[in-house]
Image 1 (tube, rainbow, N blue to C red):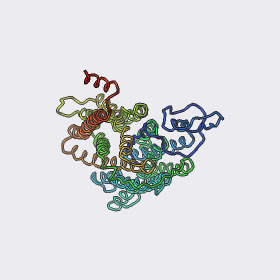
Image 2: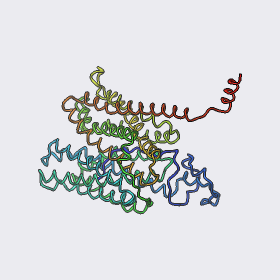
Image 3: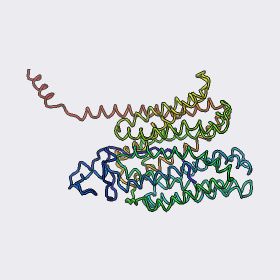
Image 4: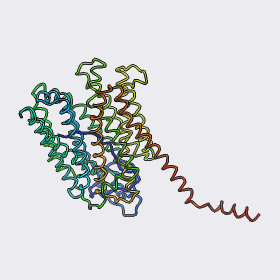
Length: 492
């Protein structure tokens, strides 16, 4: 059973040259991604395309080849299946767990252990991506997730009490390992297949993420009410298992030479450490909403339980629909990435202050304003999440990391690990604050994560820009006209 987060929200640096790809005939027709690449600038003979016309050396990197199309289909399948398997739990599993003797704290532990194991697994699997193989890791993770999804549907037959709780935790741990393997491999493969357009591609694939989140609760609730506890998990688990042989055939194989670089060397780079704080703040803020927002909607606005899911659509749809546009903007204008990060963090903080709203604002909470804030929140999350991966990758290149699948595995594992850590801390701390202080104050405090990361990122980029400007002015010698004017002045 896959679950998610993410964000996943990622793209490679447009200024970098494309990574090596397997030679696959290009699909005839106009270029899908018209952005230039360094490969196009290099010397080399023209290559004929499928229709026999000459093709420039860099043209293939801009075309949607069969290899790239199959890669996109594989990534779309895991985005959709992971989110739909994750979102079906909410409507009925907590109530079923209570029948089996699990209190609210234990239910929170069952959900939270997934993020904690995902954090550890992502670090390990990202480091060994090239040794295991990206395609094998992707397919194996998908297979494990499908199997444990089916097993999760059988847990209602086990005895109540410690046995049920222990098996739930064990299945969730296995699910986390499978999810970490599939997502780490997916991010790395996409970054290698689309080195110049990864933001556009991953932003577009977030549509499938949102689709899974939107369809999961109603589909899970319908299957549960109609057929019982087992059918939702068995059905979706079988669908995931069917995707395993499909992806074995569709997904191209990517090989790479293992690198000696380590997570710690990457993580301790100042800019990478700061961007990890941004990832953590976003994940913690989203994780806070899972155990708290539905209860607030029911108590504050007195909505029927069936309408609560419709309120959640504001966040899911705005994120899914804005991600492709933000990815395209980031690819075409890479210099805007840093400002997307900063403004996205600040807007996210503002949204959490208004979600309650915070008592210090003295604003009465209304349903229309709550939905509007969720829509804005989905957009701001995309602004912050999309630029993170390429910014980390670019900084790694600047600090001497070798370009290749090994580095992509390190970056993907690091991003997934930090996201999972936030997904564990967010609901844990958020649930405690919600119980002690109420949703209004708790959401405002959670918004502090995004505020601090946004301000810190803004200060860092301003300092970096100032340092680069001063360094370039010192390195550039005076022009000939300036020297001639200086000499004439000294002679007179």
